[in-house]
Image (cartoon, rainbow, N blue to C red; front, side):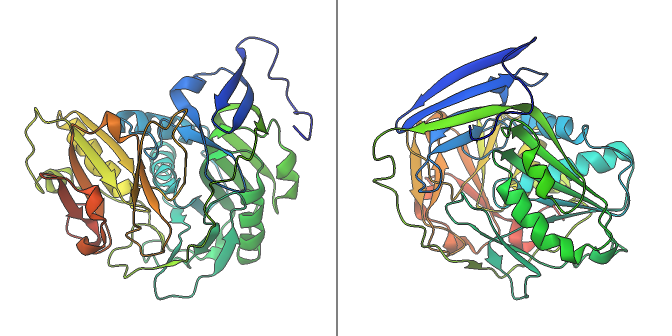
Length: 389
């Protein structure tokens, strides 16, 4: 590592270390076990990316690895409990596209319920042009498709303005350098003149300390379910087969606002969700969200699980990974948002016998036919008539 960690993870109770061998190199990990052990939270894979050769693969995010809805909810609830209940109001909670849109929504919902607060708006970044001028553009340096857009909130139920926000909560699946958070905060700060606090909530924190926090525009802290350090050593020409990042932003006819324009929380009508179809309780299910639409798919999966079904949930992703480590199989798909960036559904070997329920907000004909097999079903959440709003 370039800098010595601010905390020694190699000594004391719960100290752990591991070398993870991947097809293109090795990760050297040091961490301290807590309530959420490493192997419950994440695994690792090689990444098809010129900027970073490894991928931290969450087991509780519902992206690369299919997850149980209850486990996803337990992780987001545990993370939300780390956030102070007395944050200066009003509060803006932001999830990072595409990976942490659903996690951010879940953390927002849990924190509002636990704290009893009603002043917190949830807003997520996006890679979609929706017919409005974004108020912020920022870059995620190590991403395969790095540009993010943020739109001005348009939520009549939230009686505040961005200019009033005093607390900013940034949610992502992991942090390794903190550069993405610094880039985002720098672009947001001029729009938040009253900002007093920044809380960063991540499933795993690999920074080894708080060095990047000094670059934040307001006092900041990191909350995580696991913290440690990692060092990457690539082997050979690890990027020889990497595709160039040539994708463009999508253009979306946004028929329903799931968070791009801000929300006080999506409400799920479980009866309406279950009424969309009546799968036999003997059929194991695989609920698949597409791209940025994961949280409504997660709510559907959660309703099915509560109804007694055997269900796993995950979403397609733009994140390119190689087979090896936590990645057992790759289904390559055309992007239903029409950006030209390939999408992927990973580890389908563990879900191949399950009835697949594909959830989408783009038109049905935008879905890659390879995503659907005989008997699979689709649900158009973009129409706004499926029990989530």
